[in-house]
Image 1 (cartoon, rainbow, N blue to C red):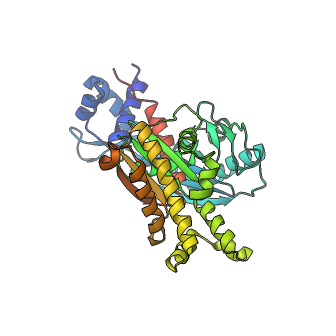
Image 2: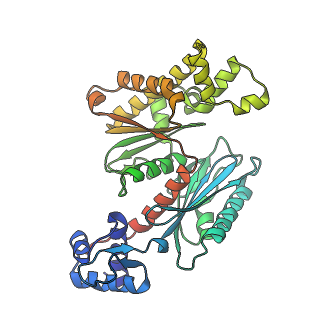
Image 3: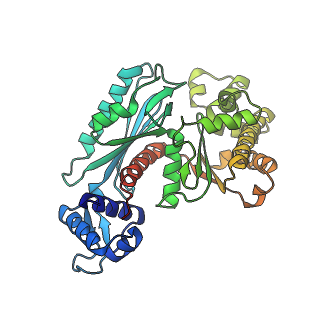
Amino acid sequence: MRTRDYKASVLNHLYRTGGGTRQEIMGSLQMRLNNIVAACNELLASGEIVREDTTRLRNVKLHLHEDRFMALGAEHATETLRLVLLDCRHREHARGTVRLAPELSGRARLDRIALEMRKFLRQHLVDPRCRLVSAGFADVAIFDKATGRSIYSAHVKDWVDQPVREVLQESMGVQTAVMTRSDAGCCADVFRERPTGPADNLLYLVVHNGIGSCLILGGRPLHDFLPSSGEMQIAVGTAGSSSRVMLESVSSTAGMTEKFLALHPRSPKEAARTTWRDIDAAARRGDAAAADILRIGGGTLGIIAANLAGFVGVDRIIVNCEVDDSQKLYRGAFETSLRENIIEPLKKSLSVAFTDYDEFNNATGAAIISQNEYFSASDLRE
């Protein structure tokens, strides 16, 4: 193994564990101590790693120099591009939102996105000690992870077969990961609770303007090498719905709001401000139709979750949504339906948690996934 491979393995180990002495690194990587010492000395000299105690040379913990391994995360939505800059400890250094005209489409839209990502870096990556090593892009579209090209988006015109990863990687000059927004949001949430990533089997659901999902099996997404969102369509089919669009029309915030407005017409300005908090408020006032919208929405998603969880045998489910009192009826219907439809062995063991929606969650997750890929490429052993 070459010296640069030893160094890469040390960096990967420190990223995954948060730090360690040379002896601890040697034991974990199963490498000879003289090779570890040589690699660590070079990394210390280059400033890529630092000593926890600068007064000691022996038996001292080593850590990554956090600012030398920055990651840019971006979330591409219909009308916005959200951007975050993280260090290798997943601490946020900057965030920002760029408005994108809905009519901006195709390659012109992709070029504009690349331009805005470069502008964001020029504005916030100003310290010469900081170095960008990776970028992540959470896309509104379904895409092919093998090629990094978009497949289809119901919300962005002409966002078909766009060379997203190729263009962004060339523009950023660093390794770039492309993923769905559901995968990115899942990554952000699970890494907050466990810095080394998920170790179990997990179903992650996003309830917002649409419905997103991510299945984690043994710590890795199920669809690593498949077009994303496929597992949701399988579950929708087994639940008897004709399409994922039908599920979103029933269970997403946008779908439930549309049904509510059909029953309670409002002016265009009022309609644009209507959220499911208004639906919940109406249900609390005794509006049976509003209550049914929330119960049916939560209950339908519960059936889908039960199908997915039972199909692969997950240990827990995380639902990312706006967690407040206005969702109690929806969440209650979801959990009741899930328990009623889940297979018997999982009824007692399956845990369910709700995490609060954060508009920068997906951009954060995209940055983290890109860092994981950057360091994982160096997972070597002697």
